[in-house]
Length: 475
Ligand SMILES: C[S@@+](CC[C@H](N)C(=O)[O-])C[C@H]1O[C@@H](n2cnc3c(N)ncnc32)[C@H](O)[C@@H]1O
Image (tube, rainbow, N blue to C red; front, top):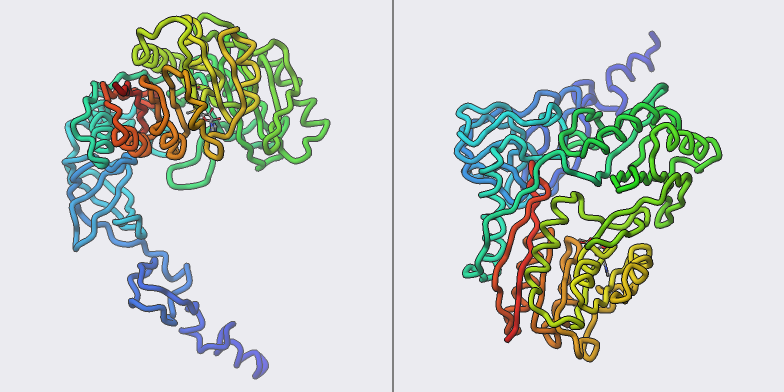
């Protein structure tokens, strides 16, 4: 060995003596790293390379005090830290593996349950331990219902609305999802169709998923079998599946090109699976590749041609509950009264409201959703409009008797403010996010509106999500 080689060997690759040469130089700012907690200020420190740091942090014992709003067990403080632990339930004694900082506490993974909660059940899905799609399948459905209602009450109390009447939860069972967004990955033969692994971006196969309707379950099996026909091995895309009355509608994010071979493979797939339609989505453009039958849905007794892509309530049963509640909230209006449906989507509420004899003005930013809506009934006038940038305001509310608001998760702060100033006496509010719902409701209450009732609806059994409908009036 030459002397230069000997010297390089002694110093290691970074020119440091060997024992330090196997450490990497880093700047660490007062948080934990995999090998422990470092000082408070940013300071140069040496920390071991991964190969030397691979010993996982030691498990610790903790008591779970409550369920956080995202469905994680929240522990009592251990050495001044409370941990968020997916899979843990209130009242349980657990062993957890500490993770990095998360919000006002620390993330952790559940190592084992020392004393299980009486509300713990065997998840009704064989993928539950691994899949990141559902986060509360291990909690008894009755306890889920109690927790979801309490979650809505907490959100309201946080905005000083403790005295609002919250009804018992209405629940939709598993196996009812007519719409699902899934990941697809190609293999040399066949492929993967499923969801991301828990706390990971790795797509896993979920052939026995308990969410979809039988028709969607079957469609997923075909897509899994044929993913390799239109995806390269390892290539991943998102797909949106909807069970309609004429068959399954599939929108797939365009892989590569999309080239002729992909299109031909999808046309063949539509034929093999007897899909109603297969479309490719590239950014905001959705391009039907094969339409064997027009995908249709019945809303309020009216047949509607479903455009590919826009929002749709995920289950027929959940949609039924929401529509019945909106009709209840706006019951008793004189025929011909003008009702505004804000964030109307494909017309889930507009069409049934029009069917009761009301005149509906419907707005949504999704032009593809509103386009077929005006044609659905002579009593509906639908318009594409960005209600965040351009809320319905002032004189536009003149002569309007009632309104429905069903915004996305972010809520509708600006639109609610404009509504509070000039809006009608009768409101039906619908939301999938109790936090923003309570924030916007507070604006209305401060403007003189009263809340008759709030009804939680659970279309997402087995997850931490919950929706709400409210009847709100101004005298
Ligand atoms: C929760 S969905 C409700 C749709 C419909 N009410 C239903 O039940 O099917 C929210 C809707 O808000 C629409 N949206 C999102 N951002 C918007 C914006 N800035 N202006 C208008 N509509 C918007 C979406 O296109 C979507 O249709």
